[in-house]
Image 1 (tube, one colour):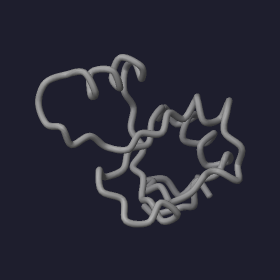
Image 2: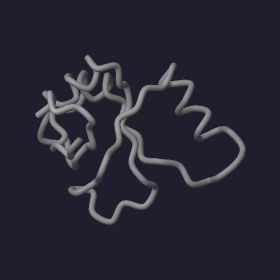
Image 3: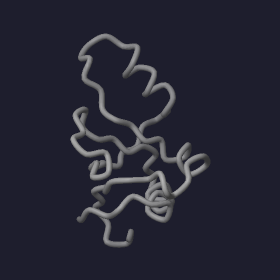
Length: 90
């Protein structure tokens, strides 16, 4: 288990391991040092919609959709670190 810098290689490896989103706490002090946690949700769009349209807490995590980022976001715009449980991702 370790933290690794978020980049396209890491996101591709996480996707291959079955993860499809990264989340981070609501309050981010430094966007360049944001800490992400990888997780899997059944349907990313529905999950995000439910977070923002559902009732309950107004505190919502920051969300990074791995497939969207890999398709649309250049490497230079990725920041932070992700906690991973596998030593196979660098």
